[in-house]
Image 1 (spheres, rainbow, N blue to C red):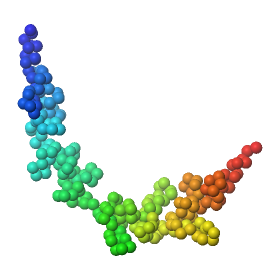
Image 2: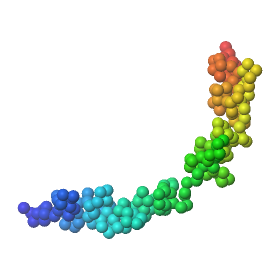
Image 3: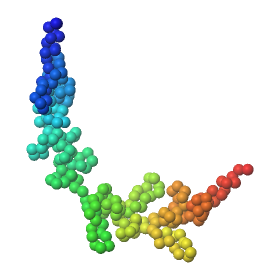
Image 4: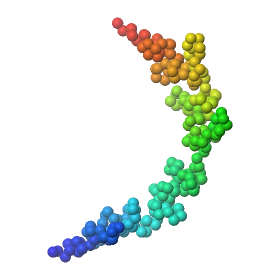
Length: 230
């Protein structure tokens, strides 16, 4: 047998598994281990340390290990801490505080809404408003500008059953049997969801349900188009 080939065949990867068995994969003389057990640090050819989910040699494992106390986990990309000890806020790489998922900068804000019984909401604010009136999605005004370029409202809802703040809340103008609907709607709309024209982005109250819920404007268009051409 060729001496060079014999030398190649006698070189084995030095990685040892949990049973104490050496990796049987043959390697070239200028490699320190097989590709499977090679450190993932670019340019490093050393064998990885046998720890579950580890991808680094002893030197780079130390460099990439979580810096929190005696934690043995590997740090996540962009942070010196592991996932369990890194702030959960967006791409923040700071350490989270004890018993919390966020760092001192990104501590969650509790909703400021107080219900009719005087109890403060226990939910966390997802997106604090710029005017520092902080309310969770459940208690934030649901007003939505129908202009796609428009903005939303961050004020608190009018009351426990409302969907809008006092500025954007209005009463549905739909009347049945001389009784005005008691439902709430946006202040720039004529009617509530049940009594609104079904045409896209229309906020007017319907005047007919045949062939579907149409306001007077869209009913006129519909009737015109029925007889548009001979």
